[in-house]
Image 1 (cartoon, rainbow, N blue to C red):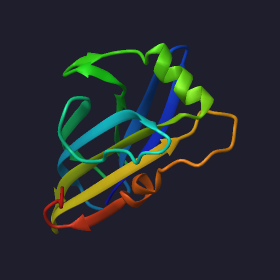
Image 2 (tube, rainbow, N blue to C red):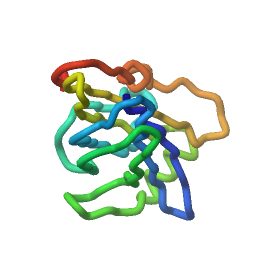
Image 3 (cartoon, rainbow, N blue to C red):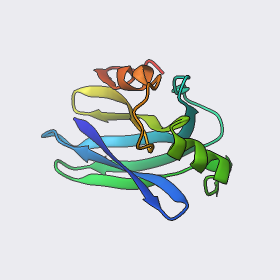
Image 4 (tube, rainbow, N blue to C red):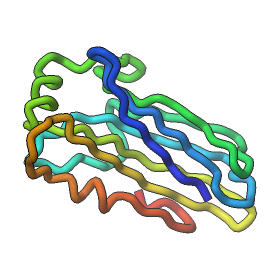
Length: 151
């Protein structure tokens, strides 16, 4: 079984997330493919957690042994394979509480029992003010299952 662990980080004007896909099971995970996206979302909107489109970071590995993990960074993109810093407007909206950051994605893999899938999402408020954020869809996106991925 794979478990995604995400850390959202800020370094100057660079905002990004490190995702670690860890094999917490007792079997080798084969053909692990993970797609993830980093998005600044207006506080009154849910994150668009559908696969596809610009901005997804893809990671793949042939095998992941028990207790091993695969780490990769996810950040904002302006075009495929073109990372970009957050704009001053995006940073201002995050710091004022007008927006929040969401990192979401999915993984598929197989083991000796067959195919499996995981969807994951984490969100973060960077404002020091309390506020209401429409992030429930992000929380509800955290699921896992056996068989083919529903996405």
